[in-house]
Length: 636
Image (cartoon, rainbow, N blue to C red; front, side, top):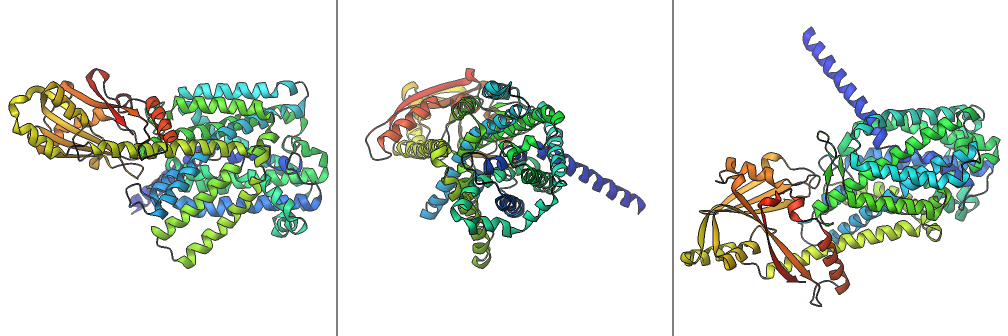
């Protein structure tokens, strides 16, 4: 009995240690974005292009809005409700979209609308991936101006160099650096919380701001001014979507644990500390975060803030890579080269195309906008829309999948949607001052994603028009056996359609008059779930002697590895030698045409995207020496 109790205690201790380790790691990945908001959020409320007058009523009102925003939007909406909406352990807006609007369901109007909303929300996240590194690094480096005027002419240059180094290091992977992300961010939160305590004790009256009356008083005094300040208050919750996107890496419990024990108390203490400082010294509004610190600690604080900003940027960049992988697997993006930067840790990937585009865009933002205050005007528009879409998708989920009654689902969703709409309306006021940028980026990425999806659908229809059923093809071959030579070895025909005859097979027989002794028609499918049980991955069907159809299924968080599948086929009854195998891959030359289908400009865009997509050989990791490409022209 005592031994059983001892084992139970050891198991509980090990579980607690694991939760603690994951919670520490979550600090460095999940909370980097929201953790650097104190660098600029309060400042933008009272000193900047969208500032309101600094007085006690407005200050307590702003702090009240910040307090209740963190409590309702992050603690309740995301930590309590949204984190439950996982797709078999994975989160993020594309995972949620594939959960509520599977691609293989009937094409109902409401299903298409949900899918479009999800794609637009995902596209807007790329804008966040551009702005977050720029504003975080720039606002951190601007702390040098508080300590001395010497660096003022070089702030932009320093920020650009930091961003350049950050993106250049992406190809090396973040596994080693990631091991110290958590401890550094923990030090960051303890530091900003300590600075908050240092200032709050000087002006304890600031805690009155927890009363929601002060937040409402801004709207009662001037509704337009209240709406205006909501756009800057929103900066304190801009990392909310990261909580949801990263549940697959850490799990729900560690994310919640680190939020309630470290992040939320530290953020509230710092924001209230900045408020206490401004009550005593309104001139500190030019940069209240750095003005909180005693002068001897300024330079160490700038270094720590820069490290925190880099870590926040790293998390957003890595998130962009993961989002792109999901888009590729779900059929919303062309194939791109994906490099694994860790041999042991899943999810550590590097996509050079995305990295280059983000790097150039970030550096242009720093130079073009010039300051973090100017960038703050562009920040928030994309995230507010994404949060609105997440709320709508969550409502669809609880009604369709969880079977909540309308009496419960509508009030819950409406409550959060009202908050989202208020924030979105406030941020729309920023559009002339820079808010147009994330809308431009999001609109551009959305156009590419939808065009690729629709282009692939149109290409599939055009290919189906000339597709010959496999049974008909085999009947024709069997009717004239003397015209086709049977040669030793195995031919694997990559087939996009799991029913018909691959064009490469038909062309090989028509032009070369040859069939291999063993022929495998291999189709790769991506399911609307993150991962597939390896035991259920491969489905093998013998069509007739010498012909096998193989369907391989992957989740949208997995990358296909065809040589591994082929190596397993002998165990499944397919008589092949992987070393004596030729892969036949079709390569279509696409031609835009005025035929009924897509708009001509969209067809041309799809053709250009297809030309720049990674080859199937590279994407499926097929040995190039064993590949034979068979070309054909397809008029869209």
